[in-house]
Length: 473
Image 1 (cartoon, rainbow, N blue to C red):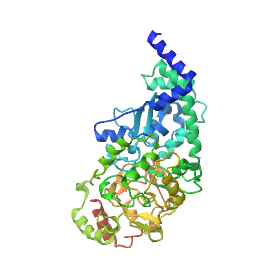
Image 2 (cartoon, rainbow, N blue to C red):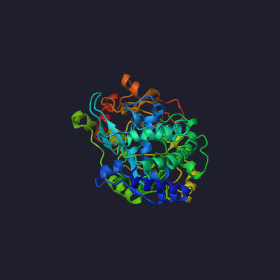
Image 3 (tube, helix red, strand yellow):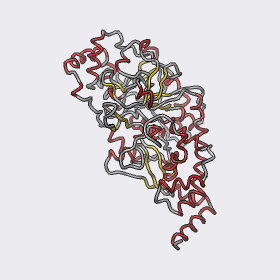
Image 4 (cartoon, helix red, strand yellow):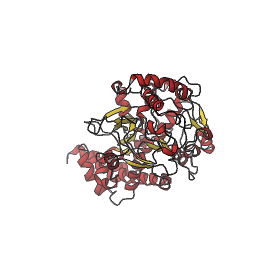
């Protein structure tokens, strides 16, 4: 063994004599991965989530190698692709993961994990990665459950994990091995067991599936109030065109009208805390998405004459609530009027509003959250890429949304990125969807597909014209 290596190992072993010193080093060193290119930074840069919920990098890379049997059996690809994380060619980490060097490298999540989606024009077409789009394939619950389940597995020990780490991380040194064996692996196991306990409320609710998340029950755990039996599962939103959304009632139920505060709360949801939040990095992302434009529907697939006729139908039936200049856009429609599933609305309580205002549980104090009585009317920019529809993603296509609720599909498959150009949405039926998709059942609590009956009584020809126009938004 080289003398330099011996000296470094001796130093590391000395650290473990006084673990408080190790903890201090981990907490005081903080070197985030950054990118000059904003799109690369958005996909891979840190927002500070590693501080509260990061996983040691070398260990994170090895987990699928050891615990592959605990990943979902269905889905595309292998490893973390099984929970819907997206890899670009030549990258060792998926989009939406960040890296920060503390005493050991840490991997966390960032904004892109929930706001980058994919599209294939047909079954055999190449995948298009679209920034700002809802992450239609990412299953956050499956990812969390993977981490929760490995915490109680007998294989979670240094003797099993370190050989796997060496296979995936060629730079893993002898010093790293000592650090991981004596400190990193035991501490990570303890943290993941806490994660298992903090999210045990998920086990009593219907599965969320890809492209959806229960936004505020995790907050209740953070601030120390009961989740009760509430279900807040809703679709991940797009994040295009944030500048014209300033002052609107944001989130599905319109519970906050500050773009900046909404972004911070989302970063907390990704794993950051008041102490670890990287405000400069978050500001960089915020300024970019203020004017990020939604991708356009392929013009060659639009019937321009039919779309022109649909523009008038849209102006008469939809624009007041869903155009940027509409008089009711960004305002809350009462639940009794819109009639959609109310579980998401009821999950966000006044008690949580009060706790958020106090800054409880290492949260920054939020000043713009409020309790509402319905769902907010959202602009429809890029609506063609935001399927499935309604706040809980319970209606698969625009064609289905214009049907009376009783005629909408009662179950369908989510999480497939092949586009359905006829119905305007993603494919939700057939062998490919069945093989790789997640079965969504509207009979489950929080999954109701009723309400929003606007336009359902239009003649069939008007519906086709309306959908054709909506492709252009």
